[in-house]
Amino acid sequence: MTKRQRDQGFTLIELLLVIVVLGILATVVVASVTGVTSEAQESSCETDAHVLYTAGEAYFAQRATNSIASTELGADAYELALVSAGFLREPSKYYDLDSSGALTPAANSPCQP
Image (tube, rainbow, N blue to C red; front, side, top):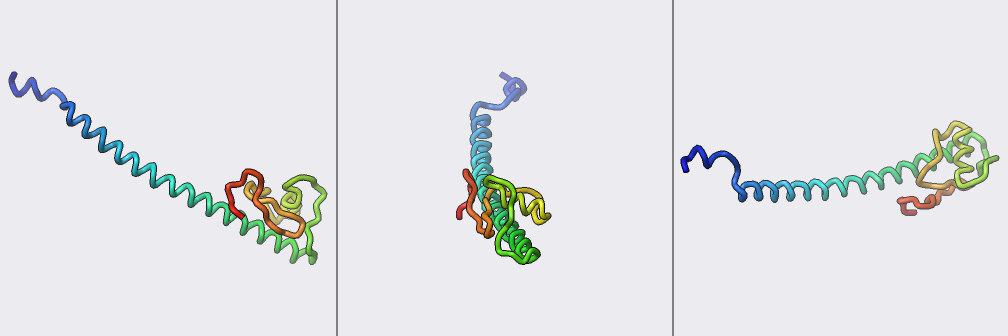
Protein backbone atom coordinates (compact mmCIF):
# COMPACT_ATOMS: atom_id res chain seq x y z
CA MET A 1 0.00 0.00 0.00
CA THR A 2 1.19 3.42 -0.75
CA LYS A 3 1.09 6.25 1.76
CA ARG A 4 -1.74 7.92 -0.12
CA GLN A 5 -4.10 4.97 0.34
CA ARG A 6 -3.51 4.74 4.14
CA ASP A 7 -4.24 8.46 4.84
CA GLN A 8 -7.90 8.25 3.94
CA GLY A 9 -9.30 8.39 7.50
CA PHE A 10 -8.70 8.22 11.23
CA THR A 11 -7.56 5.12 13.02
CA LEU A 12 -9.72 3.41 15.62
CA ILE A 13 -7.37 4.52 18.41
CA GLU A 14 -7.66 8.17 17.38
CA LEU A 15 -11.46 7.99 17.34
CA LEU A 16 -11.59 6.30 20.75
CA LEU A 17 -9.25 8.92 22.21
CA VAL A 18 -11.48 11.75 20.95
CA ILE A 19 -14.60 10.06 22.39
CA VAL A 20 -12.92 9.64 25.80
CA VAL A 21 -11.83 13.30 25.89
CA LEU A 22 -15.35 14.46 24.95
CA GLY A 23 -16.81 12.25 27.68
CA ILE A 24 -14.50 13.78 30.28
CA LEU A 25 -15.40 17.30 29.16
CA ALA A 26 -19.13 16.50 29.29
CA THR A 27 -18.78 15.16 32.84
CA VAL A 28 -17.04 18.35 33.98
CA VAL A 29 -19.72 20.55 32.40
CA VAL A 30 -22.62 18.59 33.93
CA ALA A 31 -21.01 18.70 37.38
CA SER A 32 -20.51 22.46 37.22
CA VAL A 33 -24.04 23.17 35.92
CA THR A 34 -25.59 21.12 38.74
CA GLY A 35 -23.92 23.34 41.34
CA VAL A 36 -25.09 26.51 39.61
CA THR A 37 -28.74 25.45 39.51
CA SER A 38 -28.85 24.60 43.22
CA GLU A 39 -27.29 27.98 44.07
CA ALA A 40 -29.87 29.70 41.88
CA GLN A 41 -32.69 27.86 43.68
CA GLU A 42 -31.37 28.97 47.09
CA SER A 43 -31.05 32.55 45.88
CA SER A 44 -34.58 32.48 44.49
CA CYS A 45 -35.95 31.25 47.82
CA GLU A 46 -34.10 33.94 49.77
CA THR A 47 -35.26 36.68 47.41
CA ASP A 48 -38.87 35.50 47.54
CA ALA A 49 -38.83 35.47 51.36
CA HIS A 50 -37.32 38.96 51.47
CA VAL A 51 -39.89 40.35 49.02
CA LEU A 52 -42.80 38.86 51.00
CA TYR A 53 -41.39 40.17 54.28
CA THR A 54 -40.91 43.66 52.84
CA ALA A 55 -44.40 43.70 51.29
CA GLY A 56 -45.93 42.66 54.61
CA GLU A 57 -44.01 45.33 56.51
CA ALA A 58 -45.08 47.99 53.99
CA TYR A 59 -48.69 46.85 54.31
CA PHE A 60 -48.56 47.05 58.11
CA ALA A 61 -46.87 50.47 58.03
CA GLN A 62 -49.35 51.97 55.58
CA ARG A 63 -52.46 50.52 57.19
CA ALA A 64 -51.31 51.00 60.83
CA THR A 65 -52.48 47.50 61.68
CA ASN A 66 -50.86 44.26 62.76
CA SER A 67 -52.83 41.82 60.60
CA ILE A 68 -53.55 41.47 56.91
CA ALA A 69 -57.25 41.64 56.05
CA SER A 70 -58.32 39.16 53.38
CA THR A 71 -61.63 38.29 51.78
CA GLU A 72 -60.08 35.30 49.94
CA LEU A 73 -59.84 31.70 51.12
CA GLY A 74 -56.93 29.32 50.59
CA ALA A 75 -53.19 29.19 50.98
CA ASP A 76 -52.54 32.39 49.00
CA ALA A 77 -55.32 34.43 50.65
CA TYR A 78 -53.08 36.94 52.42
CA GLU A 79 -50.69 37.15 49.49
CA LEU A 80 -53.64 37.97 47.21
CA ALA A 81 -54.60 40.72 49.66
CA LEU A 82 -51.10 42.19 49.24
CA VAL A 83 -51.44 41.88 45.46
CA SER A 84 -54.76 43.72 45.44
CA ALA A 85 -53.29 46.39 47.76
CA GLY A 86 -50.43 46.90 45.29
CA PHE A 87 -47.56 45.56 47.43
CA LEU A 88 -46.92 42.40 45.37
CA ARG A 89 -47.19 41.55 41.68
CA GLU A 90 -48.20 37.93 42.24
CA PRO A 91 -48.45 35.38 45.05
CA SER A 92 -45.30 33.50 46.01
CA LYS A 93 -44.80 30.00 44.68
CA TYR A 94 -42.35 29.13 47.47
CA TYR A 95 -43.95 30.53 50.65
CA ASP A 96 -47.33 31.03 52.27
CA LEU A 97 -48.06 34.13 54.31
CA ASP A 98 -50.37 34.24 57.32
CA SER A 99 -52.38 37.23 58.60
CA SER A 100 -49.53 38.34 60.90
CA GLY A 101 -46.95 38.30 58.09
CA ALA A 102 -45.19 35.08 59.14
CA LEU A 103 -43.77 32.95 56.34
CA THR A 104 -44.06 29.18 56.03
CA PRO A 105 -42.76 27.11 53.10
CA ALA A 106 -45.54 26.23 50.65
CA ALA A 107 -46.46 22.62 49.99
CA ASN A 108 -43.85 20.96 47.75
CA SER A 109 -41.56 23.99 48.14
CA PRO A 110 -37.82 23.39 47.70
CA CYS A 111 -37.13 26.15 50.26
CA GLN A 112 -36.04 25.30 53.77
CA PRO A 113 -37.63 27.17 56.70
